[in-house]
Image 1 (cartoon, one colour):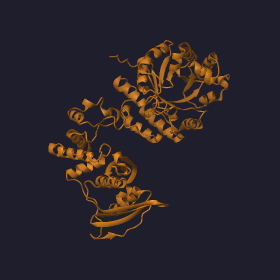
Image 2 (cartoon, rainbow, N blue to C red):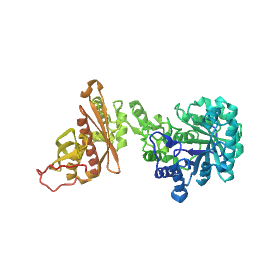
Image 3 (tube, rainbow, N blue to C red):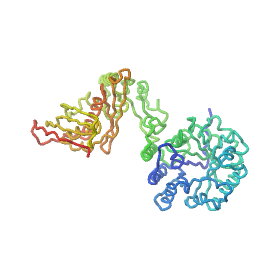
Image 4 (tube, one colour):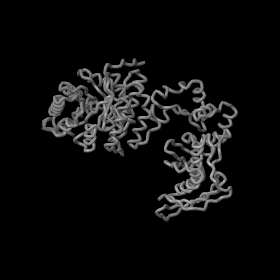
Amino acid sequence: MTQIPAAPDSFHVYDTTLRDGAQQEGLQLSVSDKLKIARSLDELGVGFIEGGWPGANPNDTAFFAAAAAGQLTLRNAKLVAFGATRKVGVRAADDPQVQALIDAATEVVCIVAKSHDEHVYRALHTTLEENLAMVQDTVSHLVANGRRVFVDCEHFFDGYRANPDYALEVVRTAAEAGAEVVVLCDTNGGMLPSWMGDIVSAAAQVGVDLGIHCHNDTGCAVANTLAAVEAGVVHVQGTMNGHGERTGNANLITVVANLQLKYGWPLLPPSALAEATRISHAIAGVTNVPMNNRQPYVGASAFAHKAGLHASAIKVDANLYQHIDPTLVGNDMRMLVSDMAGRANIQLKGSELGYDLSNRELAARITDRVKAREMDGYSYESADASFELLLREELGLLHDFFDVLSWRVITGHEVKPEGDSEAVVKVRANGVTYSLAGDGHGPLNALDVALRAALTQAYPLVDYFELTDFKVRILDQGHGTDAIVRTLIDMTDGERTWTTVGVGTNVVEASWEALHDGYLWGLTHSQVGSTPPVVPATPEAVAEPVGVSLA
């Protein structure tokens, strides 16, 4: 077993989400977005935040100007301006992009330098000697202007394997010019963990603090980063949620959680790691890139258990099937309900939702019902709201807030401003019958408009409910258009979000079931413990049909 190294006296956690992470396909960050993310990164406790490339990118220039103007206050991190060595044949003092780094007014600057001889020849179109002069001149000029300088050696590992002497000479030149840290970059992401040690050890002979910057093209970015740490680097770079070009960068949260929880290195401020899940999800919201539920430590599925055997063991000790306590990273254990579930899963999931299912006979009955419904196409893994309605029904706790007497929807090719579909829903709530019509863009939208209009008459709070997502899956493609359809609907009231599932022989039927349960769950949780409001009307009162549009 490899012995875990002792924590170095000084270790850098360096985030490059705002620069390298922003190169991800489809990711666009405004100045406001970058400010929000930087504040979250500072809250997490990273040591350095690379803000972008001033002078080369107008948006990044504006970000540094906003930060200098007081719009960004950092308590834990230092803001870093990123740039490159001077241009070929131009003095650093005369290069406007080098000057832009100084004008960014950050204490720390990180510059990228070529360390692969082929890139010097074919990308810079210059000599190896001139490239070294560019590194020396740029670093020394920035140091002379009072900046702490880090140097990213681009393509270092590929360069070392092609020409080790030159790659090491770039590291040496940067160090002698005054670079505080020289970062070894696996720019193409092609390295494997077992290849890292010897190369990092060779670079360490130069006698400068080394860093590591890994891309994930082999799926090994985190593993390569940890291998480099074990070989002696004292500076790790990565991005939140693994954002980055192509397959992304090393996921900084995973790296830091491993170093802090597995190596025992106290890298973040006290209790900061417990905010990792919240901050990771918050940044995902700003980038508008959906979270990977299976992301280590902070993903929604990171501590989700499905197998009945696992659940039985977890009832004895939760850590029997968890490598850490989820609360250490601000996450939670979740029990999944599926056809693989045993009684223990159901009992634990019920407890998670606040229900006592310790009665073995009751738990067994619910388990059998879940498995039977799974056979029919239902899936409760992502539909906690539907599962809770099933529990409440079995426990005799489900209140009938409304009964659907009939519903129908008509859709066609003619698209009007109010939509292409018309629905009529007739419901009975609090002894009153309501028949409301709704127009919408598609049958589900029309049904939602009509049902909302009807229920709002009896329960005004329904007006706060909103459908936020809708997913459809064909379960048995062997039946073609006659296949079984499963739908998932997400709804929110502004404070909570819940998911319901529906199954049917057509998408409208399945969608209606999920929609119905979505409103029922919302009413249940808005009215639990209170008497549903009574509408002052005669029991047989019927609301006249009205048209409701989205306008």
